[in-house]
Length: 112
Length: 112
Image (cartoon, rainbow over all chains, first blue to last red; front, top):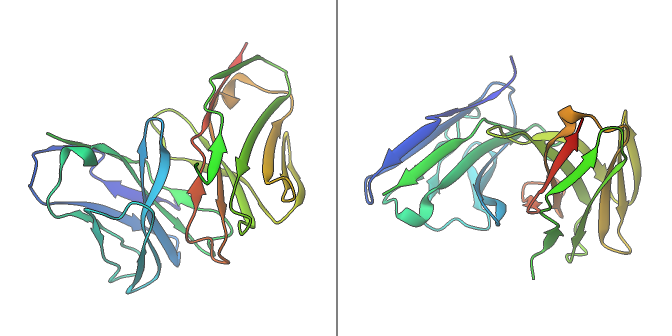
């Protein structure tokens, strides 16, 4: 089944403890993105990648890192999480970009 | 002012009604327009995408883009309770649609 898989689905962590949210797609897509979704603010793009080793900042990149060493994987790294990074995170991928993105099921992160 | 404005609703209509969902935007460079549907506790799924101005129809769904007015619409005919979800518009200026800007989303309920 063609899909974007994120792990974990739920995560509660403490301030300052480094964490990684994994994202993997099995569709051989070129484009991948990370978003966060917050009430009243909608979906905001964190980082995106157009191909292996090619990444760029979205609208809210502060406090996040990404890497794209393989085409299928696009992990999101929070080096020192803070409570304002408590949010619902989505990874997405697309073959052409303009043909629309396939989203994962989301990771609900709580930082206390 | 946000780049993309979307009335968050909630919007509640009876089954069988025609639903009209709208977004306005300020960036005249946007040329790729998408509508996503998001069910509770799920990731967004692509409904429709259009390039530049005009109409596009897919079953009970019709997407309209009016670039001169910076206004896009999604119409749902013969609405069903299964259409109850949050609808998000998204748009991009670049050819690969790497940078997607989303509206806040409109929560729609179809009452049987």
